[in-house]
Image 1 (spheres, rainbow, N blue to C red):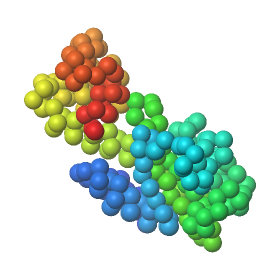
Image 2: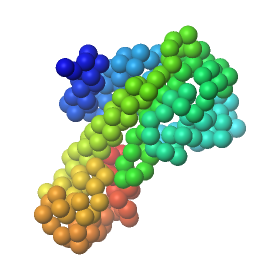
Image 3: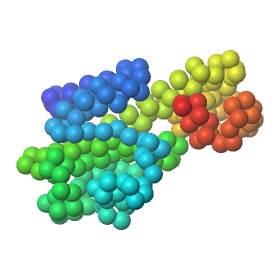
Image 4: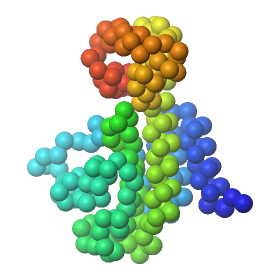
Length: 223
């Protein structure tokens, strides 16, 4: 028999799959995830949205974004896997690193595309609340897989809509599969064409869009 928690997790998978816009994913879906994890605060962010760090950046933000200072962020960046503070530190030590009471416990998970860490989700609890545990970590890992896949699909859909006049239907299909992180070989298998045909199609797509790489193509079309 499925537990109440398992049912709630499946409902979240469904909510992610049914989301129609990235804004809804960032807002209503993330709010539901925050409630699921009994978090006080939550956030979905992308690496290219993080402002440059300089002498004008508040000290707490500089420390939070420092791989040398923040062991949770360092673990996430290195392993591309979900983590909470007590995975990398003894209980209670995180609270000596972060003075904010509502960041007394922290958990983060990766958003990935084409083998690259492109962003992440984070949840925090008050220091008087219970810490995140192994079950929370396993659930977040599964949710991040669904989030990464959905974000790629939403951005590919947006891309196709923006350039439907420039790309042929087959080229639009290839762009969508690239955004989902598929290799040329996997795209060829999905569309019943050769890997070389995919390579040649990508060259034409790059020329049409004025880009030089897969990553630049997806970023430009999603901008």
